[in-house]
Amino acid sequence: MNPKYQALFEPFKLANGVEISNRLVMAPMTNFASDNEDGTVTEEELAYYKRRANGPGMIVSAVAYVTAGGKGFHGQIGADNDAQIPGLRRLAETMKSGGAKAILQIFHGGKLCPPELIPGGDLVSASAVAPEAQNNTAERAVPRALEEYEIESIIRDFGDATRRAIEAGFDGVEIHGANGYLIQQFFSPYSNRRFDRFGGDLQKRLTFPLGVIREVKQTVAEHAKSPFIVGYRFSPEEPETPGITMAETLELVETLAGQELDYLHVSLTDYRSKSRRGTNDTRSRLEIINDKLAGRAPLIGVGAVYSADEALDALKSGIAFIALGRGLIMDPDFIAKMKNNEESTIQNRLNVDDDQQRVDLVIPQYLWQVIKTTPGWFPGVK
Image (spheres, rainbow, N blue to C red):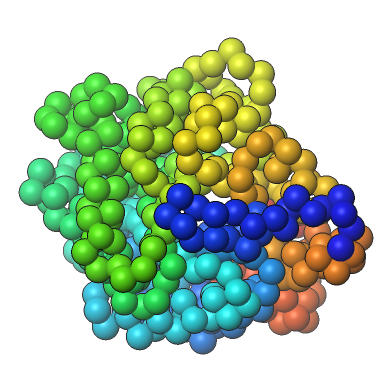
């Protein structure tokens, strides 16, 4: 290994005593590979993770829904009933086969769920506020505001999904509070127009996210027989008005820092991106958030890391871990090449007209089609 990159391969011990072998994480990337209607894991999904299991210190799965009413994608795994545990166990074993810690990401899609995937098409959210139409797309459906007893039930669903992750042999769960899904919908002043204990001022908008965290941690305390990782992913700001600003993001970070979580994971498309509003700080969002944390929880950063030098540059911002998403899809051997002094051969472009490349990289067929039809998402795709 080039000594220049040694810092990326230093181990890191979490507060719960679990040691992560290096600072490189496989990011949770939607792969559309489990197309069984019951949300069980498919062979295609297992092959995708197997191809990428050698190298990361930690792998975070594509997100699993905690209840049938929260399924957010075609081809998504579920963690909403015990019949899924055997498949989840195979997934955990595959993710851990190269020495990584396996984390199951869990969520409820809320108003972003496709109605055709939801029983009765019953879209729900914090309030009856549709997502803003973007990129000249048609208006999205208006969700139904959840009743308080339904909110409490969904909180319990997060706990049940955590128990299934424990029984399946995962090393932890990541609560997905980012990317506009239900947990973020409750924190967002755009999506949450409630005036009960789950909405109103910023602190009341935190009631649901904090309820989920407490339920997950209580489940871990009751069921885990060894240290079990609990992480939380969040998005720093929203484009909507009124939406989450950087100032409110920092209030969220301050609150999360007091929850004794094992890590926080900030969702970014580019680790160098700067704040839109809510601060005059000209540093990157990653640096601002890490500074706010002040060492109270390790931070995972992510976004447009396509080379060894970019991974190192991101780590120099002071964060604990770098997550590779698109980078590991384009080159499953990204980390191994760094370790073997072959970083100059890391592949950072896709040729979507070459299906043999898809086969060699073990990219699920549906994901390949999405990449092909989404210009600019991956380097080289126009």
